[in-house]
Length: 400
Image (spheres, rainbow, N blue to C red):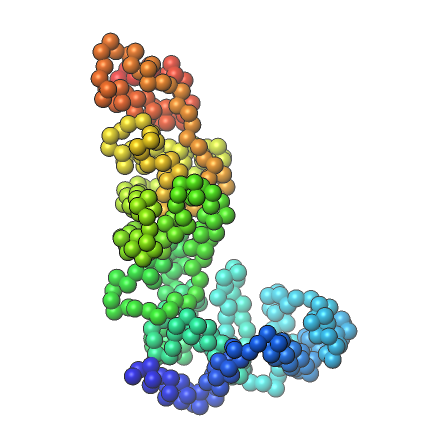
């Protein structure tokens, strides 16, 4: 009922009251989306000729530019365009508004870019341009399953929402979540979006940027594909906990039909996260690469110490694989801090002491005593940055 009201009454009425043509352009978009490649090429050339002709007739900056570079409006436009320089943000700043606007057309709204490139830019829209932008946006929202009146959520947008946008958001049930930009390091944005903890907020689509997720997925795909395959895991089992949160393990396992090994890995990662090991903000700070590697290895030892209550030798065949700890670190450590460490090739150093040498410390010694001493020996070695000699390690055990 509400969706029908928005589609058939509110939107057409707003077009009429505000002098817009969103519905007209949306209908055109819905029709042209089914064009063949040949039909699209004809339409593109027609529109390109129209916009270049308009620039040549009404925009001072382009009038001078076309003349300086001898651009022929009636020539092969795709080749002609190669003559002129690309329009940059600096050029727009320098020439806006006087040389880059059509003085015969009335400005409807002044908009700002999102600032995703580092700095917000400003641009002007008349009613027709504004209508075309909204119509195009609505079409690709429809591709994702949206229709007028369904709930949607926007992220990565400019938090400065004017009165008109606030009214539009209320009517169209659009929720804005601009605070995500400060939360991306913790990857909690998608947890907020994709887990409907509050049943009152079921969104049809999510629009905007999830930059950190794209970065971390690309980071893993570019660097750890072989490692993941060797561990008989896959990208889904490694990354999904980022998206759905550690409290939704069973849902991930069922939804993606994960096998026992992949399910075990997810439970392991949840354990890593729930340990809540405190990591200082300046962890790895300004350290050299080799020092960073040592710190990361010591952190893995600390995780292993917390997980493995038996305290036997590290990464024995019945223990969690070393590579799992590396993948687990991605869930508690900002990957930006480790991307320069050759992280995926990080290997556990060879412990310089054999168990037999520990057995010789006492005339009679039980198996459990050997295992305990071996663990203490490793701990001493780790805390000394993996540099202790066999003699130093044995002396530390004698003191115990």
